Length: 313
Image (cartoon, rainbow, N blue to C red; front, top):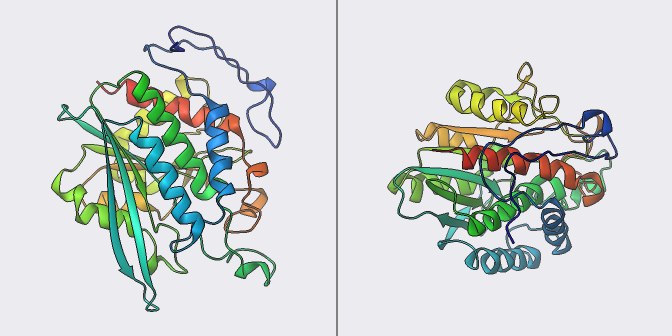
């Protein structure tokens, strides 16, 4: 039975580490008829990804997650494209990479792109311990969180079709590195291929959206390239009672997949919490684990994104 969020009250309960708490309980009316975002299931998907192990190209965890995503999405989407490609790094490493696109509403000419990356960082280069810097990053927040949100949105879209067409793009090779010369590989491949052949009207990137202490300031490159999308997304967040976590009066500047899409003429915003742990201490470290993420943060981001999609008329 479809769970709907039509003129329904939402109460966000307490969570540790500064996640939405009892002081921030809000009641609001959602003005569209749609399923609600299942945060428990999304968090299970986050945990499942981490359980595969590091999702670094060429590893067993990477192969297992790719198969898992394909099986899930093929049972939900109108169609799924699996786009395999090769890339040689500046150090001469040959990578076999795969972008996955799940499409909904194929008959619609107006298309929204939601994207995230599903790979993880090969080395924990931001760890304070030199020994730990050689370890791969578990990627609970940096990789698994955005993927978990998009997969749960896919379930919602399968339950009730959104207005217009929606493409969910899971990019590979976003976090390979060690420098940006060998990052954002899937986004570059997309804009040079399918994104050039059949470009969406605009896009929303979700990256690092599971922090247990969430804060999503406006990303400055997004504001410069797609100010109307920023106003709409952050306005929806405020309307749903999440203004504290989506402050319009604060900005950050993050180099991410969205820059490649904006450069290609696809207006795209980046929804990212680039302050993971005190002083960003958890980013690109072995401590990027599920216990430092929150199902309630996934719920908040999922609900705002769902509203953004279902109001896309």
